[in-house]
Amino acid sequence: METNSTGGSSKFIIGAVVIVAAIGVYTFLNSAKDGGVAMEENEGVMMKDDGVDVAMMKEYMSLRAAPLGDFNGSVKAVLTPKGEKTEVVITMVGGPVGGKHPAHIHVGACPMPGAVKYPLSPVVNGTSVTMVDVSIEQLWSMLPLAINVHKSAAEAKVYLACADIKNKAEANMMIGMMQKEGEAMAKEGTMMQADTMMKVGSYEVYAPEKIAKAATGDVVLFFRASWCSTCRGLDADIKANLKNIPSDLTILDVDYDNSGDLKKKYGVTYQHTMVQVDQNGKMIKKWMGSPTLAAFVAEVK
Image (cartoon, rainbow, N blue to C red; front, side, top):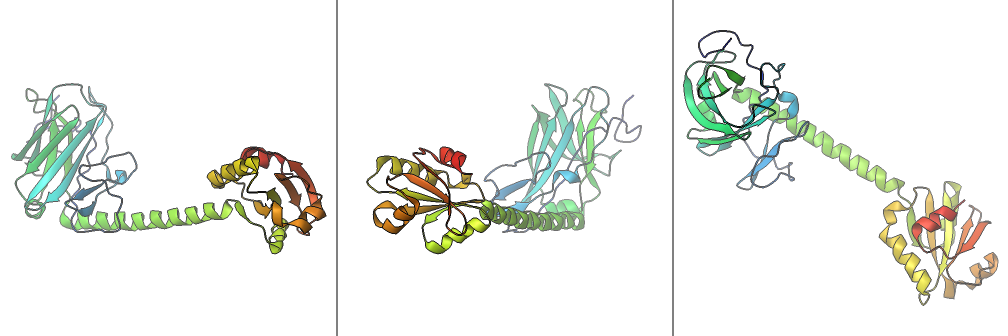
Protein backbone atom coordinates (compact mmCIF):
# COMPACT_ATOMS: atom_id res chain seq x y z
CA MET A 1 0.00 0.00 0.00
CA GLU A 2 1.34 3.49 -0.84
CA THR A 3 0.68 7.01 0.36
CA ASN A 4 0.66 9.85 -2.18
CA SER A 5 0.48 13.62 -2.01
CA THR A 6 -3.19 13.79 -2.95
CA GLY A 7 -4.75 11.06 -0.84
CA GLY A 8 -4.45 7.56 0.59
CA SER A 9 -3.43 6.09 3.89
CA SER A 10 -0.98 7.86 6.14
CA LYS A 11 0.38 4.75 7.76
CA PHE A 12 3.72 5.14 6.02
CA ILE A 13 4.30 8.42 7.80
CA ILE A 14 6.43 6.79 10.43
CA GLY A 15 9.32 9.08 11.17
CA ALA A 16 9.83 11.80 13.70
CA VAL A 17 10.49 15.37 12.58
CA VAL A 18 11.21 18.50 14.53
CA ILE A 19 10.56 21.67 12.55
CA VAL A 20 12.26 24.59 14.14
CA ALA A 21 12.18 28.25 13.19
CA ALA A 22 14.26 30.44 15.54
CA ILE A 23 14.74 34.19 15.35
CA GLY A 24 16.22 36.95 17.51
CA VAL A 25 19.28 37.17 19.75
CA TYR A 26 19.38 35.16 22.97
CA THR A 27 22.55 36.14 24.74
CA PHE A 28 21.91 33.83 27.64
CA LEU A 29 23.05 30.90 25.51
CA ASN A 30 26.77 31.69 25.58
CA SER A 31 27.80 28.07 25.22
CA ALA A 32 26.49 27.66 21.66
CA LYS A 33 28.84 25.83 19.33
CA ASP A 34 30.36 27.62 16.36
CA GLY A 35 29.33 26.68 12.85
CA GLY A 36 26.92 23.79 12.49
CA VAL A 37 24.06 22.12 14.27
CA ALA A 38 24.53 19.97 17.38
CA MET A 39 21.82 17.34 17.95
CA GLU A 40 21.63 15.03 20.95
CA GLU A 41 18.82 13.04 22.54
CA ASN A 42 17.03 15.04 25.26
CA GLU A 43 19.49 17.90 24.86
CA GLY A 44 18.91 21.43 23.62
CA VAL A 45 19.96 22.17 20.02
CA MET A 46 22.02 25.33 19.66
CA MET A 47 24.09 27.03 17.00
CA LYS A 48 25.82 30.36 16.42
CA ASP A 49 25.00 32.27 13.22
CA ASP A 50 27.50 35.04 12.41
CA GLY A 51 28.22 35.62 16.06
CA VAL A 52 24.55 35.59 17.12
CA ASP A 53 23.38 32.84 19.45
CA VAL A 54 20.14 31.27 18.25
CA ALA A 55 17.96 29.07 20.48
CA MET A 56 16.26 26.05 18.94
CA MET A 57 13.77 23.44 20.01
CA LYS A 58 14.40 20.50 22.30
CA GLU A 59 13.81 16.81 21.82
CA TYR A 60 10.46 16.95 23.62
CA MET A 61 9.03 18.81 20.56
CA SER A 62 9.52 15.71 18.37
CA LEU A 63 6.60 14.16 16.55
CA ARG A 64 6.91 10.40 16.69
CA ALA A 65 5.04 7.39 15.28
CA ALA A 66 5.47 3.63 15.41
CA PRO A 67 7.89 2.33 12.73
CA LEU A 68 6.46 0.40 9.80
CA GLY A 69 7.86 -1.46 6.80
CA ASP A 70 11.60 -1.25 6.30
CA PHE A 71 11.92 2.10 8.11
CA ASN A 72 12.52 1.87 11.83
CA GLY A 73 14.30 5.12 12.51
CA SER A 74 13.52 8.81 12.91
CA VAL A 75 13.81 11.96 10.87
CA LYS A 76 14.51 15.43 12.23
CA ALA A 77 14.46 18.77 10.43
CA VAL A 78 15.73 22.15 11.66
CA LEU A 79 14.92 25.45 9.97
CA THR A 80 17.35 28.28 10.69
CA PRO A 81 16.96 31.87 9.41
CA LYS A 82 19.93 33.07 7.36
CA GLY A 83 18.99 36.63 6.43
CA GLU A 84 16.88 36.49 3.28
CA LYS A 85 17.33 32.72 3.08
CA THR A 86 16.47 29.73 5.26
CA GLU A 87 18.77 26.81 5.98
CA VAL A 88 17.02 23.45 6.22
CA VAL A 89 19.01 20.64 7.85
CA ILE A 90 17.50 17.15 7.86
CA THR A 91 18.99 14.21 9.73
CA MET A 92 17.77 10.64 9.49
CA VAL A 93 18.72 7.96 12.01
CA GLY A 94 18.04 4.25 11.62
CA GLY A 95 16.52 4.51 8.16
CA PRO A 96 17.19 2.53 4.98
CA VAL A 97 20.92 2.22 4.36
CA GLY A 98 22.34 3.80 1.20
CA GLY A 99 20.57 5.55 -1.64
CA LYS A 100 19.02 8.98 -1.87
CA HIS A 101 15.78 9.93 -0.16
CA PRO A 102 14.09 12.91 -1.87
CA ALA A 103 12.91 15.70 0.41
CA HIS A 104 10.75 18.74 -0.27
CA ILE A 105 8.80 21.56 1.29
CA HIS A 106 5.23 20.90 0.18
CA VAL A 107 2.15 23.07 0.05
CA GLY A 108 -0.45 21.92 2.57
CA ALA A 109 -0.25 19.93 5.78
CA CYS A 110 0.55 16.39 6.88
CA PRO A 111 -0.37 13.62 6.48
CA MET A 112 -1.29 14.40 2.86
CA PRO A 113 0.54 17.54 1.68
CA GLY A 114 0.03 18.85 -1.84
CA ALA A 115 2.43 19.97 -4.57
CA VAL A 116 6.15 20.57 -4.08
CA LYS A 117 6.86 24.19 -3.17
CA TYR A 118 10.64 24.05 -2.66
CA PRO A 119 12.87 21.08 -3.48
CA LEU A 120 15.43 20.15 -0.84
CA SER A 121 18.68 18.24 -1.21
CA PRO A 122 18.03 14.50 -0.94
CA VAL A 123 18.96 12.80 2.31
CA VAL A 124 22.20 10.91 1.66
CA ASN A 125 23.99 8.98 4.40
CA GLY A 126 21.51 10.35 6.89
CA THR A 127 21.95 14.07 6.14
CA SER A 128 20.51 16.78 3.93
CA VAL A 129 21.49 20.46 3.99
CA THR A 130 19.71 23.00 1.78
CA MET A 131 19.78 26.80 1.63
CA VAL A 132 16.30 27.74 0.47
CA ASP A 133 16.13 31.07 -1.35
CA VAL A 134 13.35 32.48 0.81
CA SER A 135 13.31 34.00 4.32
CA ILE A 136 11.67 32.37 7.29
CA GLU A 137 9.20 35.26 7.41
CA GLN A 138 8.19 34.54 3.82
CA LEU A 139 7.74 30.86 4.63
CA TRP A 140 5.48 31.77 7.52
CA SER A 141 3.38 33.93 5.19
CA MET A 142 2.82 30.86 2.95
CA LEU A 143 1.57 28.43 5.62
CA PRO A 144 0.37 25.73 5.69
CA LEU A 145 3.59 24.10 4.52
CA ALA A 146 5.11 20.71 5.37
CA ILE A 147 8.46 18.97 4.99
CA ASN A 148 8.24 15.50 3.50
CA VAL A 149 10.91 12.80 3.08
CA HIS A 150 10.30 10.12 0.44
CA LYS A 151 11.61 6.58 0.23
CA SER A 152 13.31 7.05 -3.16
CA ALA A 153 12.92 8.76 -6.51
CA ALA A 154 11.45 5.56 -7.93
CA GLU A 155 9.05 5.21 -4.99
CA ALA A 156 8.30 8.87 -4.38
CA LYS A 157 4.75 8.07 -3.32
CA VAL A 158 6.06 6.20 -0.28
CA TYR A 159 6.78 8.63 2.54
CA LEU A 160 9.26 8.07 5.35
CA ALA A 161 8.30 11.11 7.42
CA CYS A 162 6.23 14.27 7.30
CA ALA A 163 5.79 17.25 9.64
CA ASP A 164 4.16 20.66 9.45
CA ILE A 165 6.28 23.80 9.62
CA LYS A 166 5.40 25.71 12.78
CA ASN A 167 4.02 29.22 12.48
CA LYS A 168 5.73 32.27 13.94
CA ALA A 169 3.66 32.35 17.11
CA GLU A 170 4.37 28.67 17.84
CA ALA A 171 8.06 29.11 17.12
CA ASN A 172 8.34 32.13 19.43
CA MET A 173 6.43 30.29 22.15
CA MET A 174 8.78 27.32 21.88
CA ILE A 175 11.82 29.60 22.00
CA GLY A 176 10.40 31.25 25.13
CA MET A 177 9.99 27.83 26.72
CA MET A 178 13.57 26.98 25.78
CA GLN A 179 14.82 30.23 27.29
CA LYS A 180 13.02 29.66 30.59
CA GLU A 181 14.22 26.09 30.82
CA GLY A 182 17.77 27.15 29.97
CA GLU A 183 17.70 29.77 32.72
CA ALA A 184 16.29 27.24 35.19
CA MET A 185 18.99 24.70 34.29
CA ALA A 186 21.70 27.36 34.65
CA LYS A 187 20.36 28.32 38.07
CA GLU A 188 20.19 24.68 39.14
CA GLY A 189 23.74 24.12 37.90
CA THR A 190 24.99 27.11 39.89
CA MET A 191 23.26 25.84 43.02
CA MET A 192 24.70 22.35 42.53
CA GLN A 193 28.18 23.81 42.00
CA ALA A 194 27.87 25.92 45.16
CA ASP A 195 26.62 22.89 47.09
CA THR A 196 29.55 20.82 45.85
CA MET A 197 31.99 23.55 46.84
CA MET A 198 30.49 23.66 50.32
CA LYS A 199 30.87 19.92 50.72
CA VAL A 200 34.56 19.78 49.78
CA GLY A 201 36.97 19.69 52.71
CA SER A 202 39.73 22.24 53.16
CA TYR A 203 43.48 22.65 53.48
CA GLU A 204 44.33 25.89 55.27
CA VAL A 205 46.95 27.58 57.41
CA TYR A 206 46.69 26.77 61.12
CA ALA A 207 44.99 29.19 63.50
CA PRO A 208 43.95 28.25 67.08
CA GLU A 209 40.27 29.06 66.51
CA LYS A 210 40.06 26.64 63.55
CA ILE A 211 40.34 23.64 65.87
CA ALA A 212 36.69 24.29 66.78
CA LYS A 213 35.77 22.92 63.32
CA ALA A 214 36.18 19.47 64.87
CA ALA A 215 32.73 20.00 66.42
CA THR A 216 31.19 19.17 63.04
CA GLY A 217 33.95 17.19 61.35
CA ASP A 218 37.55 16.02 61.52
CA VAL A 219 40.51 18.33 62.09
CA VAL A 220 44.11 17.20 61.53
CA LEU A 221 47.24 19.26 62.16
CA PHE A 222 49.94 18.69 59.54
CA PHE A 223 53.33 19.62 61.03
CA ARG A 224 55.61 20.33 58.08
CA ALA A 225 58.87 22.14 57.35
CA SER A 226 59.71 23.88 54.08
CA TRP A 227 63.09 22.12 53.97
CA CYS A 228 61.54 18.65 54.41
CA SER A 229 61.30 16.79 51.07
CA THR A 230 58.61 14.34 52.21
CA CYS A 231 56.60 17.26 53.64
CA ARG A 232 56.82 19.05 50.30
CA GLY A 233 55.64 15.89 48.52
CA LEU A 234 52.51 15.53 50.66
CA ASP A 235 51.82 19.27 50.51
CA ALA A 236 51.96 19.17 46.68
CA ASP A 237 49.69 16.10 46.49
CA ILE A 238 47.08 17.68 48.77
CA LYS A 239 47.06 20.91 46.73
CA ALA A 240 46.73 18.93 43.50
CA ASN A 241 43.75 17.02 44.86
CA LEU A 242 41.85 19.57 46.91
CA LYS A 243 38.53 18.38 45.47
CA ASN A 244 39.23 14.93 46.93
CA ILE A 245 39.48 16.11 50.53
CA PRO A 246 36.46 14.59 52.32
CA SER A 247 33.72 17.12 53.02
CA ASP A 248 34.04 16.77 56.78
CA LEU A 249 37.86 17.01 56.94
CA THR A 250 39.88 20.15 57.66
CA ILE A 251 43.66 19.87 57.30
CA LEU A 252 45.57 22.61 59.12
CA ASP A 253 49.06 23.43 57.83
CA VAL A 254 51.36 23.94 60.86
CA ASP A 255 54.83 25.52 60.47
CA TYR A 256 57.08 22.95 62.18
CA ASP A 257 59.94 25.42 62.73
CA ASN A 258 57.80 28.10 64.41
CA SER A 259 55.28 26.13 66.48
CA GLY A 260 57.25 25.14 69.59
CA ASP A 261 54.28 25.25 71.95
CA LEU A 262 52.13 23.03 69.70
CA LYS A 263 54.97 20.55 69.24
CA LYS A 264 55.43 20.34 72.97
CA LYS A 265 51.69 19.96 73.60
CA TYR A 266 51.32 17.02 71.21
CA GLY A 267 54.80 15.52 71.63
CA VAL A 268 55.82 16.21 68.04
CA THR A 269 59.57 15.66 67.55
CA TYR A 270 59.68 15.00 63.83
CA GLN A 271 58.52 16.98 60.81
CA HIS A 272 55.88 15.38 58.61
CA THR A 273 53.77 14.49 61.67
CA MET A 274 49.95 14.49 61.68
CA VAL A 275 47.86 15.05 64.80
CA GLN A 276 44.08 14.59 64.76
CA VAL A 277 42.32 16.63 67.47
CA ASP A 278 38.81 17.14 68.81
CA GLN A 279 37.07 20.50 69.13
CA ASN A 280 38.79 21.16 72.43
CA GLY A 281 42.23 20.51 71.00
CA LYS A 282 42.61 17.12 72.69
CA MET A 283 44.67 14.66 70.63
CA ILE A 284 42.71 11.77 69.12
CA LYS A 285 45.48 10.21 67.04
CA LYS A 286 49.07 10.90 65.93
CA TRP A 287 51.00 9.40 63.02
CA MET A 288 53.89 10.16 60.66
CA GLY A 289 54.84 9.76 57.02
CA SER A 290 51.69 9.72 54.88
CA PRO A 291 53.09 10.26 51.37
CA THR A 292 49.79 11.15 49.65
CA LEU A 293 46.39 12.65 50.43
CA ALA A 294 44.78 9.24 49.99
CA ALA A 295 47.13 7.71 52.55
CA PHE A 296 46.55 10.68 54.85
CA VAL A 297 42.75 10.32 54.68
CA ALA A 298 42.99 6.58 55.34
CA GLU A 299 44.59 7.31 58.73
CA VAL A 300 41.90 9.68 59.94
CA LYS A 301 39.63 8.19 62.62
